[in-house]
Length: 303
Image (cartoon, rainbow, N blue to C red):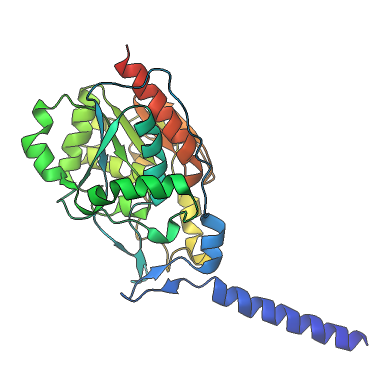
């Protein structure tokens, strides 16, 4: 009898292992890339969000806007050569936009060259009516954004329309933005004009662009503390099938070397404001991040 029990347990363990092996493998897409495994999607995404609509007593009535800078790149080549299908995270884009719109701020969308903003549609909360509504409203802007390059060349120096720049997360923020010279100029423009900079999850990776014209001593965010997606959590991605391989480079480590301190150790709902830089740790932080950003922007324009 005891031997039969051991055999049965061994079979159950084997079946459990096989099941986990398949549900934790990244899912191949038709274009030869991979999206997160069913197991990773269950852990990291949700069909709804914790969006909490706020009614602001004195919403902005003027022309101040937010410039949202998105990646136009889809594929991250991992350390093993496999391609991860990424882009901008929909919750980290849409949920803050909801709060900013409620506070009276419109949002302009740009990508480096004006190509469409890539979105991680596999992370879209399909049963969240608020997110679906704002996505529908902004869909044309995402598909036909402005060009960051054109903005820098033709608009930036004379513009007084913007109160903040916003860099959403998704691993796509690590693609094309950290080395973008136009973003370098926009970050310095925002900083020099006492505007707000908003960055959530992997969005702070794009802040590295501010270091392109100098080293640590001239980095405008040296000494800042931020909330951001932890490197240690990214390192766990292959083990649950979130990514099809190890990260090609480590952005938090690079920020640390430039004098930035990441205050959170988990991919949680941590938000933080240091001077005019507002940051958040993960999609779980998007609601609090959006509320804080909208509130602080209102304070600034209502002075």
